Image (tube, rainbow, N blue to C red; front, top):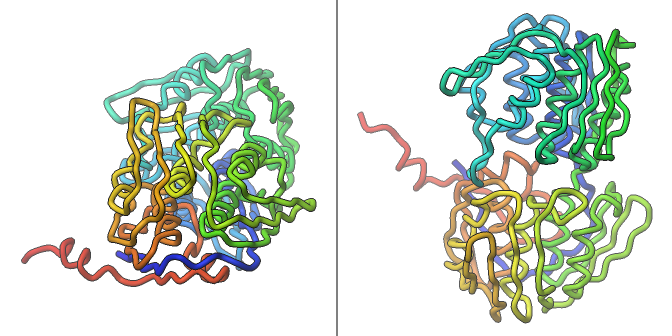
Length: 430
């Protein structure tokens, strides 16, 4: 296991190019199962979740290889329709393969997935939607077995779940009849996902709105498909907040401002200056930020829950009082305890986190408990006075490629080192 060693208090300055989106590439990788072919996915981030999805695809019979930031997936020899419990529980996004396997094989056997420890994330919406589309479903404890073909029709989601929207789209691709999904998620990653499917020859319309239409019948599929993954707006927001929190100035390339409107709005209310030029954003901030007063996480286009932990870190040293209301996940304040160790003044009241800005944070040893919380603690280390150690950074590596290298490219004093103490604890006793 590794850890980050950070010497804080250095303003981040320079230029950084945003990588491809984790939340876009994972369902797209799953979608390569839908139809036999060779797929080249460019701007694919080399992160833990992508490697985990790659391993699952290999277990199903797919071939994979890398060319720099491009992953090539050959799904022509897929024959397996069951995913092991160990693989499923290693990554939440493995659930996407339920819909793609049903379209490819007419059956699927999976286990309820694992992933971040940010609260209950049941797949009931996925299962109920598949049931409405005519699939036969049997649940045996953690095991879920499905079979059949999509019968078409109209499904209305009880909540605009991103994962359920993508899963039902994939399941509908194998049907002979048209399918309409209402109350869909409208995230930019859904638009990117649908764009990939169109490139493959599938007919999917309405992505980005709350109603998506999937035409049944044969796919107009080309044997080889090349696709460029959209930029990662959450990575962009994380780096922007790191610059803002350290009072720095940086230029970010490969990021469209329109996919980050809610984040830009909050940062500007805090005193950050943000200038946009097509796919370039310039961010500069004063040494002391102001509290925006109140922020609530919501489905897109609202403020993203995946940016809430990083924002909480910024607020720990901002002037004034701010309340963050978390409306997406019920246990997404686990980073609060670690921030308090660094001197933050935070109280949790149900869905609300009340943050009163302090003069400074002090470097200390803290532990990442999940992906975005780990990123937030890294930001705290960059903002703090003195040295910080961030343990369990394997959580961070799930969603950020070479996070330490990216920060160093902007002048941050951060090193990645072996956590020898943790390795001794984990070493089995003979």
